[in-house]
Amino acid sequence: MQNLPDVFDSLARAWPEYSVRKGQLELAINIESVMESGAVGIFEAGTGTGKTLSYLVPAFIASGSVIISTGTKNLQDQLFQKDLPVMQKMFPEKRVALLKGRANYLCPQRLKTNIKIDHRNELLAHQLMEVRSWSTRSRTNDLTEILDPEDNAALQKLVTSTRDSCLGSRCPEFNECPLYRAREKASQADIVIVNHHLLLADLTQREDNIRSLLPDVTALVIDEAHQIPDIARQFFGQRLSSGQFSELLRDVRAELSLLGNDDPHSSDYVNALERQLVALKRLMLAGTDPYFEQWLDEKSRHLIIAVDQSLAELGNRLLDVAARSDGLAQCAKRALGMADIFALLTEQADPGGDYVHWIERTQGSYTIHLSPLEISDEFQKVVRESEASWIFTSATLSVDGSFNHFKSELGVSDEISAIFESPFDYLKSVKAYVPSGLPEPGSEEHTKQLVARCVPLIENNNERTFFLFTSHRALRLAALELRQIGRPLLVQGAKSKIQMLTEFRESPRSVLLGTQSFWEGVDVRGAGLKLLIIDKLPFPNPSDPIYNAQSILIRDNGGNSFTELALPKTVLSLKQGFGRLMREASDMGLFVLGDSRISSRSYRKYVINNLPEMVWLDKHEDAVAWMRKL
Image (cartoon, rainbow, N blue to C red; front, side, top):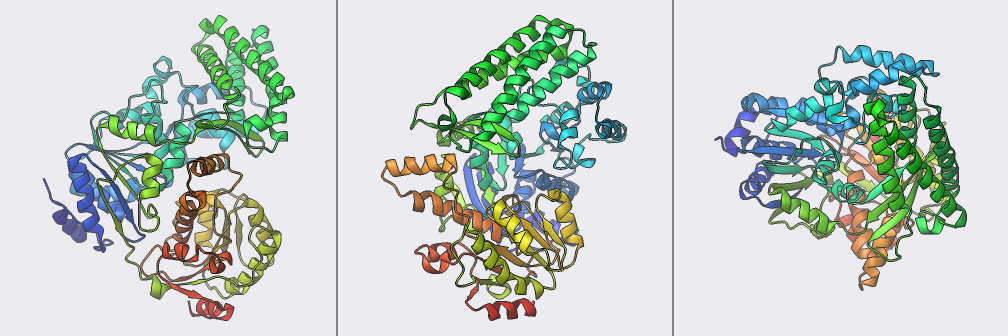
């Protein structure tokens, strides 16, 4: 068995790009201790620490199998394609697997089914044939090789399965299924790379007919661990979306079409349910209150009863004809399962209970949620039952030098923990600037004045600019104000995230405007980012149902929701956004925070102390001068 220092020495000899980083070996030693003792470890590793190798080296040395879970599919691919091949050269006996969620793998059966159906949309029919042609050449049938999910959502739904639509071992394509092949390979691997959604789906046993990832796992490494509380809450609750209803209707019609559309009686049930769902969607989207009980009235109650009845009637009808095809049998199971969940989600919840009952409305669709306020007991149970070591790591886990906020959310202990500061010299490389005299954040006037102050900074920036917003409304207004800037302007929503980041790297002096999805998991290393602007402190939205309910709970227990919940969440989010600026030791830049409250409110010191040490500029001309110098 190799020891850690020897492996790092070998890395330095074998990998020209590698250089020993401050704290990296010490972090690796801590992680190895957690793995060997079966404990729980929590580690914050600032940007530039090199935490990826700090957990990969102990993972490869470990005698058992290790699951590494990342925040995004992009990070999965980066690990698998860049970092793991280096480690595999040193540990050729170790078997490595990359495993993604269902929506990433081609479902051959659904592709065949949807090719056979007469599509009125010629473009979609053409795209299906392109996917079939690609599938004959691909080794993995990972759809990210051929399509961007943001640009091809409709196509992706036709060529992938969901947990509900999958036929499992009854599928005629089961032996050739890319998903099951990937799962089988993962079950035999020593190192498995997954993402948080897939891990939690497995941990909470939400996948039917699928081999669990967890038996005999020695350790789980959770990278980007700050995302886990919000993702875990989704899996410990219940939800049902208008999209799921639409997919059920589409799949039933597809099955009936394959059978020759010779069953008008079943079609009548499909049409009846669709009429009720269209009326429900219209009523859902007409409302603005996120709380389900506030939206519920006599009219909506009648509609809910009608949908419930139509869903059950369709499910029972499909059961009657289920012998005609496995697809119809699966649709019957889906319809009746959705009827049960719909009944649960549309019951009036007890006020002040343990769950938040709310409606999420986005771009012409809705989701009904029943979300637990507390997930600590459930998550602690998952950790305990896994009988594995757990390592939580991220660049942003601590608040005010403590892990208490993170630990209380997940209910985990930290038998071994440490904070490793970034080795970057922020004091020399970055200056921060808060424009004085701006209006209170949240108004149109604030956005307009902030943009006006930032235009000279952008014009004096010979490299690229990131402009991050806390709301889509502010982003759209800023885009209008900047339309005459004379630089490539990349605005979130106009193109997919992948396209935007590609153009950002390829377009000198470009300006990228993004909201929350660009605050983290976006690495523009080497792109020449010199100016980062954040429009305001990212305080939680007070109208967010979960945050609001958590605040009430804290206050009811005699606590202070602002200091115990709002400030920690704000600081963690701000640290993530700020982390976009410096990705390498040689990077330099200007950080602009367009929120004058940081200069006047009592939490100024608290916020500043949670960011790296740097010079804060007071004068606009000093900020312009620094920008010119860069």
